[in-house]
Each structure stands twice: as structure tokens, then as C-alpha cells.
Amino acid sequence: MKYGICTLALVPLRLEQAHRSEMVSQVLFGELFEILDEQADWTSIRLLETDYLGWIQNGQFQELNDLDMQHYLTGTPIIVGREGGVLFTDTAQFQLCHGTKLYLDAENTVNLSSLRLTYQGSINPFTSNQFETEVSRLALSYKDTPYLWGGRSQWGIDCSGFSQLIYGCFDLSLPRDAYQQAEKGETVDFISEIKVGDLAFFDNAEGRITHVGIMLDRDTIIHASAQVRVDRMDTEGIFNAEQNRYTHKLRIVKRYN
Image (cartoon, rainbow, N blue to C red; front, side, top):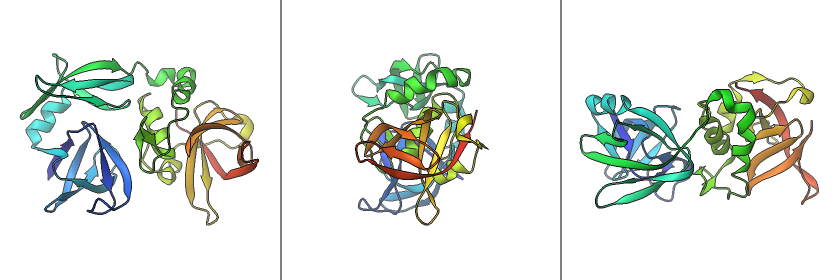
């Protein structure tokens, strides 16, 4: 079994092995994956944390042997904070996006056999115990972030990437796509029982779950639709006051903590 680690700040994960192919997600620096198939310009991977599949361009990652991976994972895990941070050497540096997970050694470095980078920047301060008190503030800091299909960062994000990122900052792991997230958690049976941080899911005309948002209270939701925005929600779904219509039909509400 062969493994790899993403060695750039943020790279596309494609459905097929071509630049014109759909970007199904993004891979952040330090994310680990199993290598499934190697071609001349592209490699098929399975992300270890979420089991998500896709193609990454060769040159955007480094292969790891078992010793390298075990050594990397012995570091102290941190998550890059909302203000971001940089990794640098004597000759180069690049910016990391909020939510990036790193394993740092005692000298604050990412230390692999052929790669040594020092981290400088903010560190996510939250724990799962702070979820109810802090999740709204963190989610609202993303307001007006542009929507990007497959996006996972403040530079562009989709609906399930948004919920996954925010939850991850509280050490709560979610699958990548909305329909996968809806398969987890406990169902909230009534709108009146909704709590801050619950996830609301919405389906299309065929009954397939295609959208998710984070509840700020029992009738207010923050979600990524054209941009990260705040709207009202009731038993019918999300009501967009600017368009004066319901834009998403409610299917189910789930709780994870």
C-alpha cells in the first residue's frame, strides 16, 4: 500500500484525470491519502480521513513510506486558525488557509525526510466543548465568502465544505458531501427543538439531498448558496427575502455533538 501527502496549500481533486474534469473537492496541505492508481500526469487517491476519492495532479504531492507517515503523525496536531498562517523555508514560503491540519514537531516544523517547513501563524483555539458557544461566531466570520463547487476554504467554498470545515475546527469530523453528512448524526424531530450548530439538509425534486446549512438558532440558517449567507428557515425550507421565495426544500435536521 502506498501513501501520499499534499505539499501545496490547496489543490483540486478532480473526478477524472484531466484539468477540464469536475473539481469534486480540494486537498489541503498535510492531508494524507492512499495512492490507488498512478498515471503519467495524474494519480487516483483515497483521502484517509474521509475515504473521499478523486484524481490529483502529479507534482502536487509527495509519496510517503510507512516510516515517514508514522514519523509525521507523531507530531502535535494543530489546526490553522481563522487569521491563517504560513509555512516557510530559507528560500520559500506559502500561505495556508483556515482549517488546515498540521502535525508539528517540537521546533514547530513539518518534518518529513525530504521536506522540512516551519509554521508561523494562528492556531485554532476551539475544542468540542466550545461548540455551542462559539460555532455561530466562527460560521458568521465566513459570511459573503464566494460559493465554489468543491471548495473548502475562505477563498471559495461549497455548502458541505462549509459545514465540514466549521465542524472540523471543533474536532468534530464530517464526511465530505451533504448526502453523506445526512447519513450521520441524530435526527432532530421538531423545528422547535433545533439548537445552534445543528445541520439542516435539503433535497431536490428527485428527493436527493443536495444542500446543507448550519443553524444559528431554530429559524435562522447560514449556508453557501452563491455566497455564504444568512436566511430564515421554517418547516418548508429556506426563504430568500431578496428573491421573495423559498429556494431550498427542507428534508431533515441532524445533530452531531
